[in-house]
Structures are given as C-alpha cells and as structure tokens.
Image (cartoon, rainbow, N blue to C red; front, side, top):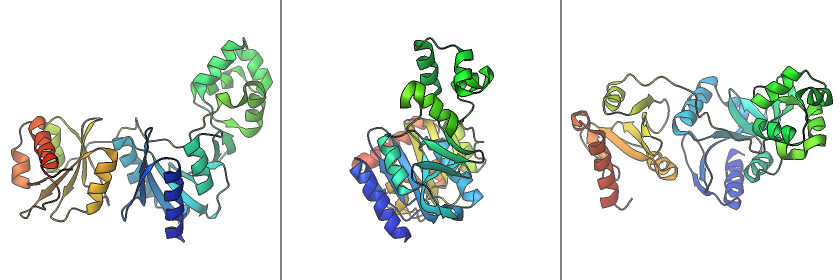
Length: 293
C-alpha cells in the first residue's frame, strides 16, 4: 500500500513539472522544480511517525531550508481532501491536497485543536483593507471580533475560523488567503554540533549541525549556496549522492582508510589538516569536476 502511494505521489509531482527522485532513505521522495525543493515522507498512517523522527525532520528542514511534508492516507482516521494537518509540527496531507498545494489553486484549510481554520496572508489582508478604506473597527464588526483580533490577523499571529473566513471571503474573495500549504522550518535556530568534526567545521567558518538516522551525519553551511552534507564512516550511502545532487549541496565522506572512488573523501587526519574553507570547497569542486558530477 505504501509503495502504491509513493508511486502516486511521484506521478503527481512529475505532472506538476518536478524533477523527482525516489529513495530508500528517511524520505521516500525528493522533488524539485523552478520554485522549490521538497522532501516527502510517505506513510499509510501519519500517526506512525515518532516525535523524535519528526523533530529530526524539522531540524533538517530548517538547516537546509527545504520543506518536509508527510503524504498519507490517514492519521488514525481518513485525511480529508483540501485540509492540511500537522504531525509533531510536520505538514501532513493526503495526495489530493498535495496536488492542490502544488498548484496553489485553493486557500489553505488547517485542521488544528481549534478545529478547521484558514490560513490568512497577513500582508495582503492589510493591503486589501486599506485599499477599500475599511477601518479596523469596521472590519471587526464584519467579522464579529475585536479590533485587537483584526490586528493579530494582519500581524500573522492568529488563524481564522472557517465561519469568519467565509465572512472575509465575502469581502475580499480568496486573495487574502494563503494558497501554499507547504512550509519549511526556515528561521528556527538549532544549536551547532559538538563533535570533533562539527567543531572543525566551525573553525573553518561553517555552521555545523549534527543529524541522527540520516544518510549524512553533519550539515555544514558556509552560506545558503555552500552547504556540505558530510558522512562520517567507511560506507557512505548512495542516498547521500541523490540528496546532494537534487538540493544542490556538496557531499563529503570522512573515512578511516579506504576511500570510495565515487564521492569526495578524506581521512580524518586529512580533514583536520584543512585550515581554510576555500581549500576544502576547492577540493570537493575539483573532485566533482574531474569525475563529471
């Protein structure tokens, strides 16, 4: 059943113009188009993800600025079409909703503890209100809320219930609602790693974050365009290459003795001898150029 869902999700992404890579790793699918990169975790039941695993996914999403989405048929009960859920902070939806989000052709409806809520575009809401000459007080009367609540809507700090969203729609149409239900964890701050390799990266001017149960052990960021996914150990997974290629990151293996021929590799001693980030990046770039990657 899961394999069928993976195939269906891959096809949906391909039909929307994405380059798609299926993996036997933490994510079943990586997709990329001109606007975004997306990690997709495919599950029959979204409730099967653990809190620890979700926390790791959120960390990866933030460090790489790549959204993670769970595509599932159910979360205990069947997932509703057109509704976006969350599982431990990870955006969750069924396949039909994924298609809608990729096309950005419908307002985002969220299922939360407060029930069904709509996602407002706070900037557009304020722009549209001012363009129509509607005061905060008058808007509050339309929606049946306080002026303070309208301010919160326009600040993006509060979701709106469906009944109030319908009132808002009657005034502005769908222009004031968010239509992209897939978000990354960008902006969330995570502590840097404390391993000897993470500290070495830090000394070279990188921000280095350690990962768990991933095809890479470290994410080293010089800036948004210079990211090194690093595997420590003698058997780097081929999944590392697939991920790095699709997200446009560098890859590096830090090994004991035997260096694999298909990935830039350094022994621990060689890695620790680097004194300049540019030299390390040049080593990786030269390898990729020499091997036609």
